[in-house]
Length: 285
Image (cartoon, rainbow, N blue to C red; front, side, top):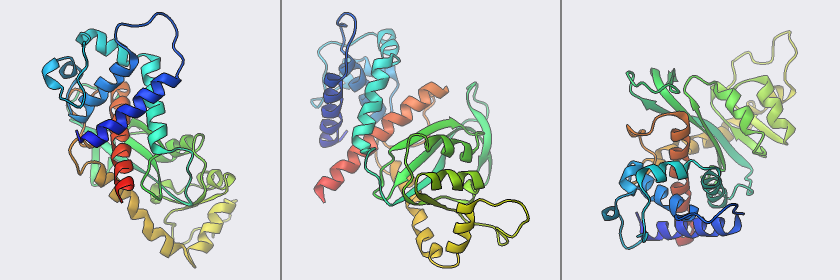
């Protein structure tokens, strides 16, 4: 791991751990150490047992004592460790900073067709069908992902984006592909003061049934400025590509990351590393 990136991640983990309340007796291994060990293993694309071997640490991070594999696996699943991971992401992703242009899209995370993963499902991907999960991301103009979700591959993208809107305020234009074309979703974005913009059928708005006012407004926008604005939607495609374009990025799911809980935790850790790298690049520029 880049020393600068690790310093950013470990500093935020330490700060969040100090600010969170702690109940019960003091554990032998602190939550800060457990979360840091997990982030260390995720960045190196290694399983949890790898993080419990002393020879796998360097000068950037070297805990004095290491828990057993069973202790480590149990501790990383605790509510407080999960809350630390969530808070670290929120800080690095600056979730309270809203831009006037945002994007929503999904990225397939496939597993093998013969996988015994009980949570993975078959669903559509570009070019056919596959089995696995999907990362649903709400991205900002400056390449952050303040809100995201991982669901089985067969879950509809519109349904997940509607749930994301419960935690993310849509402001300005929200660009998405044709899979998100739904009147209720247009109205939901408009409730927050935003305007969803997706490709529309040629005869959109000419039917006899009641139409979404926000969708009808989008029909008018496509006759004026929408074509110029919609060109920016490719940013989220480049964002997904950038996530896997460096060592330790979000590539294909490793063989030991199976089950919805593990996949969500793994993807969340990868997004933390991505935002730490993004923060360093912005500071350097």
